[in-house]
Length: 281
Image 1: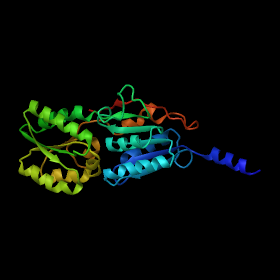
Image 2: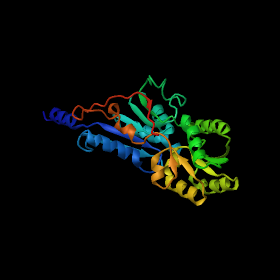
Image 3: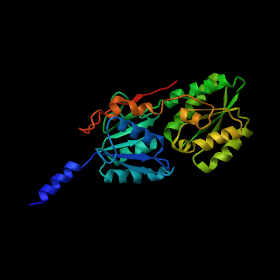
Image 4: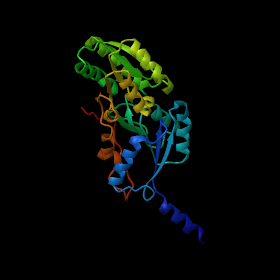
């Protein structure tokens, strides 16, 4: 006679569970910002909400297995940042809602049908990074008037960065700049890449956002300083770490969207947000 009572009690105490998939080795500012915004809405971790986070330690090959692991944990919603993580989650489930936070082009990446109507079980925010690549070069040239050659740090393993690299090349032609490709897909290659950029007489640096670069912010900023390369980045937290300047989407604004975090902790219902870009000048 006690078994139905115990089962009912377990159902009443069950709380929503959020799964987070990251490519780095630690939660980072993204997950902490999200937790902070939920806290403002009355969601307290361990009381009326729970988190399960998995991190790939900068090894993209680990993402599919980690995504499958989160799905097996039967989380209520999946949250992630960039394109590789979002693709791994989409391949892992067609039923659990997925929200991405910083995908350069979700349509080209095959994540959504369109920005207006994402479709399926996935939606989120785009940083429109490729569109802003030219503006970053323009601002860098305005800052360094005699600039003629710019090194561009990017990672060919990430689809979004390849698109931004192509956009950079087009913009460079219009601005009269010559680009030096710093294609780096492993953290141990940064030192040699910067040495090659210096040998190529690069007078500035543009960093294209990638999971690897984001996980090595301080190292990249320090190398830019060491090699006397005035640099522009995609987000303000690079400047906080010592970088010269930035231009791009506001990192924390995504977590403050009304439709993103929801409004009702008692009902534990989160509203679904359609894909849209957020930009900070």
